[in-house]
Length: 217
Image (cartoon, rainbow, N blue to C red; front, side, top):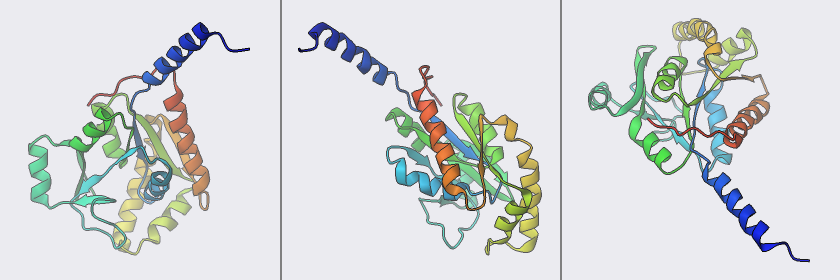
């Protein structure tokens, strides 16, 4: 027996309307230096093929494994300040004597295309983005312990001992701001796959919500 055509038609129209209500989202991934944000982002890129990953600009020199246009945009002080003056930055801040910021135009273009946007950013920058994009969903990546975080920071060959101590002290301050975020995910030693699953679960939950606010910046 064939299904009634009127029920098929009305039901399919309702399902199409549900799909049409889907909005683009801005996801913020933040946490203290050394907690593993870059590693999580690299894994997300493999599965989130339809998502736009915002690239932060910075005036600090690149590390050995960092690629221009993928990990960061490496700008001069002059270029950075010119873009700030022109209103081309979504947010910007000074961290460890260097400037960091998220260019506005690529984020706006992605949202206009209907793409979700993931912004990997420090805790200070995350607060600034939440003010500009009130509907953004923020995720704080936390270490399993301060000992494990210090080990990760110490393993970086690009930082001298003084800089490591500075980053570790700042991380202790940033951890106290975790309650400002919508979600907290723990990135435990040898547990990146679990952390990755937790982040993906948050994405799925937000995308499946019946109320889909429109994001504007």
